[in-house]
Structure formats: structure tokens, C-alpha cells
Length: 150
Image 1 (cartoon, rainbow, N blue to C red):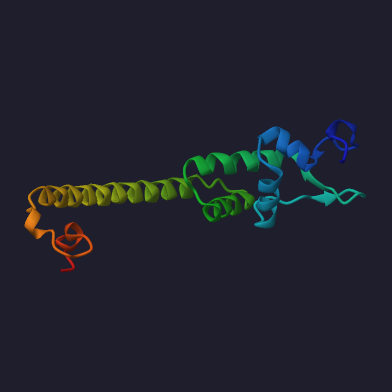
Image 2 (cartoon, rainbow, N blue to C red):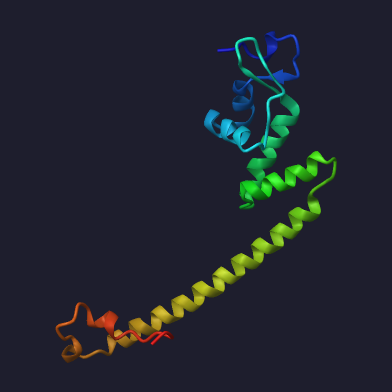
């Protein structure tokens, strides 16, 4: 394995091992981020090890991790980073994405509440089914469910 940062001529460059140590991300994750062009090495050593500009790459990797806490997809993160690489702050886009995510969560909560109400209604109806309604079918409970599609 390539020696760590301290023995190199340029202390601003580091290997994937340095990135792993600084961020806690796995080698596989860092290689994947490179493959989808979220990060890129700036050069390779004679031994063909990738070298990264440490400060900026660590900043980007930490940004990715924190963006994922907000449930941003890697595509969304890539778009935010492209704004950043144009020397602009992506904060406006971050706020817009977050608002969309809040709306999606609110919609999901509403859908789940509706689903819960429907399931409670069906369960209550089942409590009132008589034994005689349990015929030779696969499961009369399911067959007696009335949905909007009926």
C-alpha cells in the first residue's frame, strides 16, 4: 500500500486510505463516488494509486454524507456539487429540494393515515361477519372487502 500523507512531497495530496481515515467511508463507497463522478483524483502515483486533493475531497465527502442525512439522492447531490463547482453556493437549490421532500413526507403521512383508516374499517367489518359467511372460498375475509375499485 502507498505510504501515508506524511511521507509524500505534497502534503495536500492523499490516497484513498487518507480519505477513509478522515471520513469513515468505505473504500468501496469512495470508489463508487469516483465512478459516478462525485469526486475525482487529481493524479496517480507511479504505482498507479489515485491521489486526491485532501482538503477539497474531504469537504465534498462530508457534504455528501450530510446531504444523505437529509435524504438527498446521489443525483441530487451531484447537481448541488455541480453548482458548487461553478463557484456558486447551492443553498437556494438545497432549500427547494428540502421543501419538496417535506411535501413528499406530508403526502406519504396523509396516504398512510388513509390506509390506516381503511384497514381499521375493514377489521371492524370483519368483527361483524357471521360464521355462516365463511364459505368454501379461499378467505372470505378478503373476498368480502369492499374497495373503491369494486
